[in-house]
Image (tube, rainbow, N blue to C red; front, side, top):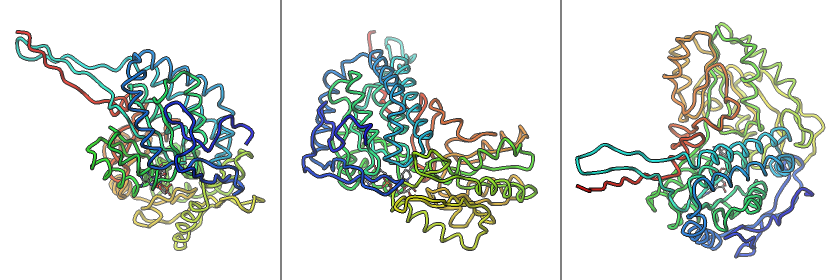
Length: 481
Ligand code: TXE
């Protein structure tokens, strides 16, 4: 790949690019063609040990002594460097993840935005003074955890690095990052830019590798003090159990089955682009993808027909073609999505994109809109993580809320209605970490706290809230008489 300026088969440990201790590598595939395009390091427990030790040294040394405003300045400089390289980062991500170029570039811009946001916030987080008994002065200190572990998935590497590493570094933690084995090139590129920006050695360490090897070694390591994980429910449970053994806090973001609820009084022209885009963006591989569209029965047929028109017109292509939808991440993910679609045979295929002349080895599926589902249908209950949406009719507010809340998940939801009173009622009644009214996703919303309830996980990332997650509170009670 001509854009690369770093060795993809190395780990970054203590400011040095090093070959993994076991000498192993893992192959890299271009999802658009299925072609092998390179190799990454297969980091192991030994590399994780070295990375945690390097992070601890940085935390006790140069990084720990860097004042908050300088941490912020450094992150903002890094954000600027990311912006300047946005096209290059987008090209790398397109080849590695199969993401259409414009969507990949938006991720690079979002990464820069996280670094600006958390850079600006670094010196604005502070404790409080607390009125107490006569003779005391009491105050609180917000302190970093120390060494933080970050397990990042393959669907939005740059955005998730931005929200997680950005907030952790801003608050003075030293980080060990384990990117996903299917998508770690932009993590390596980002780490190299961080070194160039002047981040002290060991403040950010990156160990690529398999989840069961490097990932499990990191989450179970006794030297980390916080773990943030974004990924599947099953792996999230394993991560939480490992964190429990070390009694450390954990932030889990585990995806969802997010509904958009469309009432008869909604402005359909405004809603339609959101209804579809929230399902097919990044080929449906989005934690906050809206995979369930709930429509009040009196306008159900109209919504299905208008969404179907859009599905039929969707263009699917290679990431470099930069069309509406690219390939899925891997042959394995293609198998998972195809398996779900096989469970839709009792539903109506209301709309479906046509796959044109695409490379044989690419991981493509036809974006598909299923109609006529009930809330209990398998496709309306389980996270598919592909470009597949189901439309479900409902009658009245009560049923809408029951269906919206009728899964194990609770990440994001939206409500489309002109009634202000209903907007407020639904925003309260729906179980989700974020509820959008007459929009969906708020264009990414770096500033907006994000996270789930139920099996969507717990803890909050993004916005100012993440700064609390990446710090611990110390209370100082001084008796002076
Ligand atoms: O996830 P995993 P997978 C969902 C989505 C998808 C399914 C499977 O439904 O179809 O999960 O994807 C690391 N200890 N999401 O198998 O396994 C792994 O290396 C520590 C939703 O890829 O959860 C990678 O870095 N780490 C989600 C990360 O966990 C381990 C995004 C995610 O992989 C590990 C991705 C272990 N034992 C998938 N095993 C979202 N919320 O957006 C794996 N990993």
